[in-house]
Every structure is written in structure tokens, then in C-alpha cells.
Length: 223
Image (cartoon, rainbow, N blue to C red; front, side, top):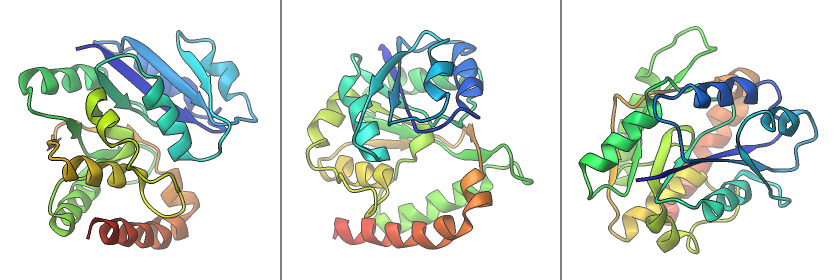
């Protein structure tokens, strides 16, 4: 199963180099790497061009628009999503490939996060969050920087997913629509990915207030 790796970016010059270096160091490399330029105004794209990546422009501002452009542009059977501030371990993509190859019934997979630049470097927080949201939703969620899914499941739900970043969490919204059509989302607690905790550190209001509000909207949308 060939892999398309999608990385949406907006002014990520501080992070994109480390991210792409980690991708280049993977034991199993993706078959294509798509960087979605969501109107970057810094050196992000200049840095990305130093790596063997495909750069695609998305002029409509917002993560959903950028993400969707990447998913739609992907050529291969398996889409893997990565944030520009992520630094995956060398076996990350290898593990993802093994999960799908060993269980043909899985449509999507996700795993926990560790914030590499916060004091407590543990997946416990995300694991607790996942368990709580699964209890509320009644099914597994997906989490942007550590998500992979089959291209065909994306094509089945893409037109029904929300296009408004202000209303919902795009990754949980995607999980809701996959679940609605009977798709199977697998959670692997060992599929850990490492991301920046900058949003928690720099904008706690967004993380602790706006995030829960969006989450409530996600839950209501499922009813």
C-alpha cells in the first residue's frame, strides 16, 4: 500500500525543517510528500523546497481548506496527515503501514501525542482525552497530527465534512462522518507522535476555552 503524506503549512519557518528532516529519516519513507502552502508569508516554502516534496498552493485560508486540498491531491491508497511542528520517530510511518497491512478492515488509525517542548513529556494527557471523547461520542475520534486513513474512505465522506474552521474540529468531524458510514477507526496507543505544545503555551484561552466549545459543536452535529 503506497502512502501519501500531507502537511498543511502556514508560516511554519521555525518548524518545517525539523519536520521534513524527520520524514526523510523514516525507516519507511512515504511515496509522496505534499506540502500545502496556505498563503505562507515567511520562509516556510523556501525551506520546504530544499526537500523532495510537492508543493501545492491553497489560497483559501484555513486548515480545512488546506487539508482538503492535500487529501484531494494525493495519488495513493493511504493518506497520512502530519503537522508542520511534528517530529515523528523513525518508525512512525512503518508502524502505520504495518497496521493497515495486518488488518484490511481498518479504514483509519490514530495514536497519542507527546508535546516535546512542554515540561511533562508524556502521552498520558492525550490518552486520557481520547478515552473521554470516545465515551462521549460513542466511537473513536481522529487527531490531526497523528492520523492516517484510506483514500477511498475520504472520497466517500469528503462532501459531507464541514468546511468551516470556526465551527468544529476538522479531525473529529472527519471521524464522525467516517463512523456514520460504518467506517472502522482503530486506535493504537503505541503509535505515538511528537508535536509542539506551542498552542497550549502561547494561547491557553484557545486550547482550554475555544477548543471545548468546538468540541461541543462536534458532539451536537452527531446527534
